[in-house]
Amino acid sequence: MAVSYTAIGNNKKFIILTYGCQMNVRDSETIAGLLEAMGYVETVDEREADLIVFNTCSVRHSAENKVFGKVGEVIGLKRKNPDLIIAFGGCMSQTPEARAILKKQGVDIIFGTYNIHELPSLIEEVLTTKKPVIRVYEKAEGIVENLPAKRQSGISAFVNIMFGCNNFCSYCIVPYTRGRERSRKPDDIIKEIKQLSRQGYKEVTLLGQNVNSYGRGLEEKVDFPDLLKMVCDIEGIERIRFTTSHPKDMSDKLIETMTSEHKICEHAHVAMQAGSNRILERMNRHYTREYYLNLTRKLREKVPGIAITTDIIVGFPGETEEDFEDTLDMVRKVRFDAAFTFMFSPRAGTKAAEFKDQVPLEVKKARLERLNELQYGIATEINKTLEGTVQEVLVEGPSKTDPDKLTSRTRTNRIVIFSGSEDLIGKLINVKITEARTFSLFGELV
Ligand code: SAM
Ligand code: SF4
Ligand code: F3S
Image 1 (cartoon, helix red, strand yellow):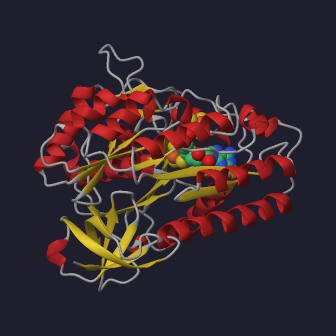
Image 2 (cartoon, helix red, strand yellow):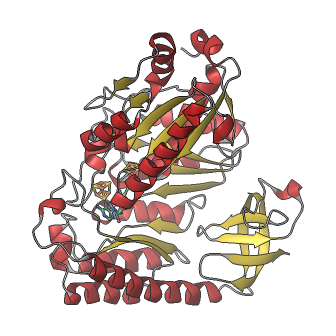
C-alpha cells in the first residue's frame, strides 16, 4: 500500500506530537512509518514542518486541555506556511465534544483510533480538495496487520498484543475511545517479535489495557502465559515486559510463568486505583482490598525481588476521608516501588461523571499531595536499599538530563544513570548502584 503514495511526501517534513499512554507511543511509530513510506521525512522542529500530526489522549481533562492549547499554537504557523496540514488523531478524536472544538479551531484532518492506516489517503484527499476532512469510525473493523513502523529505539520495542478494553471501569473513557477488546493472533505477534530480534532488539514490552485477558475471542485456544512462553522461546530477545495487568485477571498460571521464565522481568504494573472496598465497587473494579493484598503478597513470594508499581486515583465521587485513609493504608501495606497518582477527572459519557457526590477540587488536591508524600517516601526508602548492590541493566542511550552519561534500566524497570562509552548502548551489563533517589538511581561500571 505504501508505494503508491511515495510521490506525495516528496521530502516534505512531518512531526508527530504524542500524548497519553504507551499505546499512543506505539501508534505514533506506525504513523511515522506510514508517513515515511509516503516520502515524508521527520523533523523535530514544528516550525519547519509541512505536516503536524497530533496523537492525543482523553483520559483526563488536563490532558485534553494541554492539547487544545497546543493546537491553537500550531494553527498560528499556518500564517507563515499556508500549505501546512494539521492532522488530528488519537483518543480525543473519538469523542464528539473534542471533534466539535477541533472543527472550530480549523484542523485539516480528524482521524480516529480505528483508522490510522487511512491517514495517507486522507492527506492525499486534503491536498487534492484543499478542504478539511473528518473520518472517524464508531468501532473497529478487525485488526489491520503489517503496517510499517518507525520505531523510536533500536533496543527496546513496544508490541501490541491486544486493543481496546471490555472492563468499563466507571471512571474510564478508554472502552469508548478504543472499543471492545480484540487480541492479535499469536502468529502475527511472534512474527513481529522475531523480526525485531533479527533487527537487533533486546527487549520487548507487550502492550494491552488488560494483558491478562489476552486470547479471549481468538479461534486458537491461547492465554497470556502461553503467549509469554512463545515469546520467551525467541532467540535474541533477552528481556520481556508487559503492561498493564488488571488485578482481577492476574492468574496463578501467569505468576508461575513469571517464576519459571528467566527472560520475563521482575516487574508487575498492577493498577490498584483505590484502597476502599466501597470505592472499588463503585469503580466497577471487581476485586477487594483483601484480594489485592493477597495478590501482591503472592507476587512478592513467588517472584523474588519483584517491583510492583500501580495507578491510584484520589477524589473519586463519594470518597470520604475514611475511604482515602484506606488507600493510604494499602500504600503502606503493599509498599509500591512506584505509583502513578491522579486526581479523579470526570469524563463525559462515563458512569462516574454522572455521580452526584463529586469531591471538591481542593480536597482532591490535598489528598493527592498527602498520597504523593507517602509514596515518594516509600519509593526512596526502597531505592536506598539498592545502594551498594550490583544490578544488571540494559543500556538504552545517552541520558536525557545529562547527555555525557548513559541511561539504562534494571530488570525491575528502574532507571540507572552512569558514565560509560557509547559502545555499551544496546548491551546488558552490570553496574554498581552508588546513589539512590526517588525516581532514579546512579551507578558505576563494575
Ligand atoms: N488499563 C489500565 C488498567 O486498568 O490498569 C489503565 C489504563 S488508563 C489509560 C491509566 C490510568 O489512568 C488508570 O489506571 C487510572 O488510574 C487513570 N485514569 C483513568 N481514568 C481516569 C479518570 N477519569 N480520572 C483520573 N484518572 C483516570
Ligand atoms: Fe480503563 Fe478499566 Fe479498561 Fe483500564 S481496565 S482501560 S482503567 S476501563
Ligand atoms: Fe491511552 Fe489516553 Fe487513549 S491513556 S488509550 S491515549 S485515552
